[in-house]
Image: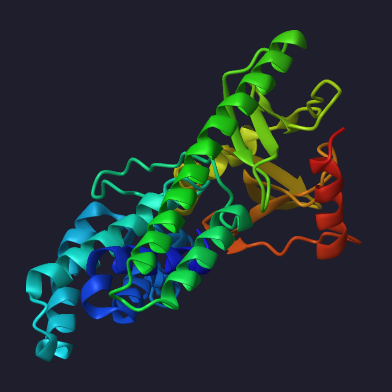
Length: 337
């Protein structure tokens, strides 16, 4: 999830482990530990953009990483705070729990993590958007209230626990909401007599009221949105053809194989004015017009004279769309159809 959510979670876990002994220092170290896994973003400076994307939320978001990093950070913190005689083991426990909860939280997003690295299986429950105010703001509020109490005050522990319970309860609720939304999409596809192979559901930005579905057919994908305030039937888009045949000349090349792996197979290929684009459809569209709004995440495939593909992140032209208009559309759609 977003950095603020990870900092708040790390700080709260740090407080729960060592808050009674070292007060706000536990929150500080917890917040630091909660951001460590996301340092993998610096991979972009050491490798090509596609490989860095492929590696994102891999090793650094794994159980193995938490096991290896915790004693290193525990040793460092113990040396810094040697006079407090906390001990190596309590520090290691703090860092392990603060680091491992980072990928456990990220497991609920669309991108997910390779939590069981080195196995390539990626966990992505897709029940919460990468930033959700209803998860983060109440959690942050209780954490701040806890900070204003002395470490020996039982109310400090109480408010920190409430923050952890409220945020965890909301996360559990999003799983239930995803199940309800999935059932509604499935029922509509059955009513429309649409044959589909698989269906992917996820919340739209910043909320868990409006949900998005992508139904895979034999030749492409159909997209729909559903709000819990809807009063009319769900309307699925026209089919977006997969156009997989456009990739055939290049499908054995490493770059293309990487893109297919990154997208987990949820992609379409577009040819626009003679240029080829690989579109990862999992991250949705820019706007609420399910038939016309462009998909956000795309790569430009550039073949050289020998037919070797070079990949670039494509800058999407959203025309007259602006952040304000897009969020206005989102808000109106949340209120129902």
